[in-house]
Every structure is written in structure tokens, then in C-alpha cells.
Image (cartoon, rainbow, N blue to C red; front, side, top):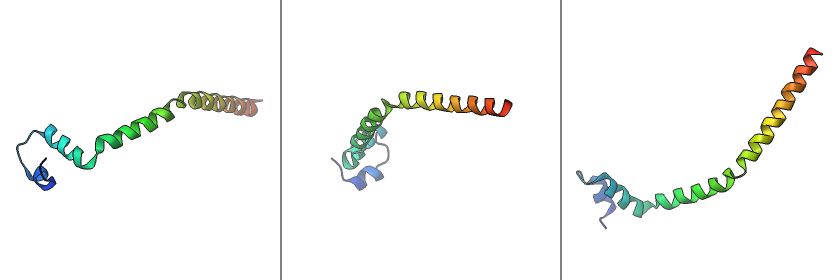
Length: 70
């Protein structure tokens, strides 16, 4: 593994190789993996909240329309 400054200063290396070497230093892929798992857990409840929210908003709009017109 090359020093970090050498990775950043070397010109002409394969960009994917440089990204993989920098990932070894900073651990981006592990952080992204943790974020994906957190969002995956939250995403499972999202359709339920969206359906309930849409139902409540629709009922409120229908009620406001009926209140104004009647």
C-alpha cells in the first residue's frame, strides 16, 4: 500500500485503483454500507406512513371543500 500523499499526487494511475486505495484509508464503503442498512430499515415503514398521510390529507381536503361549499 502506497502512502496517502503519493496516491493523491501520482498522475496516470487507474482512477479505480486510486479510489480503492483511498477507500482503504478512509473506509467510505463501510460508512456507505452502514447508511444503506439504516435507510433500508426506515424505508420498510415508509409506504405505510405515506398511505396514512395521503389518506389524512385527502380527508382534510374533502372536509375543507365541503365546509366551504355547504
